[in-house]
Length: 102
Length: 167
Image 1 (tube, rainbow over the protein chains, first blue to last red):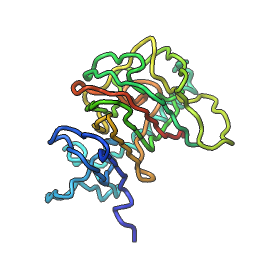
Image 2 (image 1 turned 120 degrees about the vertical axis):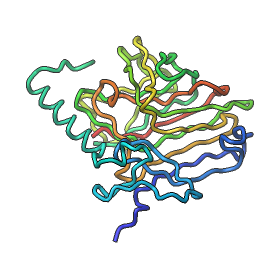
Image 3 (image 1 turned 60 degrees about the vertical axis):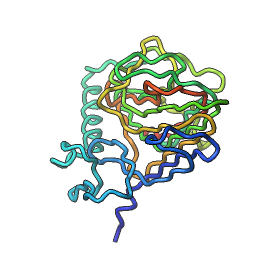
Image 4 (image 1 turned 180 degrees about the vertical axis):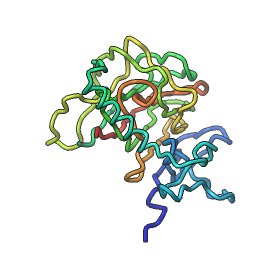
């Protein structure tokens, strides 16, 4: 059985040898956190360990999603969008209707 | 394909708002090498080099205006494969810090906030395998991303790298 934690990235902000940022922006010391990449828009979300609301999750594509209402409305993974746009771009190239940039 | 590292040894970001032209050598940009090329962004690292406190509000974002006519990378800047046996790409991704037509950060497609103090601060973000940020083609807004400073603070000198993989 796979864990959802396999989707988690890693963020390190190390201010141990730095004055850090003003209070609300992070303070001093070291900050380590798991992050998730929203499967539907690719925004990276820093996970708040104190969050009590349920985190957005798409059971259809088995990935976390961000709090954007659009990302919670339907399952349209960004990777699928990129796949389809790439296919379309290849077809356009084959038809000769795209001029490649240098 | 193969992973690559776009690194700038030392640079000072220039703070700009969303939808404004970037300043040459004040940002790092990465664009697909062709209309069909796909990139995945795996890791970002920034290490502060400032000699006094320098709150720096770095943002990774897609660009709503993409660059044209990029300037070749200068001394201290490089875009190199991680594996020495990597074959040269027919259409390599475009890593740049300056261009004739300036890119602009999208106001709506920000991806990651990496604020830190460039006086001794370090920031590193790594994606989980399969959860990387995608870039496709070489047109707005999916074809280019930038690492740049948002308005505010006092951006300080730093070194940075982006590890990515052309697919």
